[in-house]
Length: 200
Image (cartoon, rainbow, N blue to C red; front, side, top):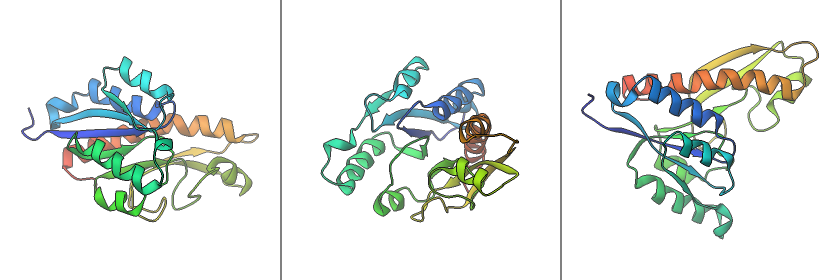
């Protein structure tokens, strides 16, 4: 049994498919026994997020903090930090969390805040990545796990997966192919962080 508990808090806004991939990997691979790694909570900014019910079905504690209840982005992020910090996280994982985070939030979790982005960064930061890759004539696309910094989608890269762009691909078909790889590389990157004790 690992001597030091390494709590993980996962933030979601939608279906929670990457969250579920992480939780299932943690359970199947006994992260708790091997490295003290434990998903302590799943938090959503949307009460109707389908991922909340999915997390509960996997035995996870869930919480909701609705961003609409706050007058500013800074106020929401401050409340979110307080909620996250109650779980004493060693790692905060963004898994489809559709919020632009304030610099104060990012700095508070510097070195222990990670995200997955559906492109081969540094190509195509931001939104609509799959259509942009198709429009640019890319032969490959993919996904990137990276540390979060104040520069959007530009933190140090932890893991990447490459998928082909096929003739006739739409943004949706390419997105589905990339998502299957996201479900593999995100748990893998977290497992490596747990085994090394650092995401870098």
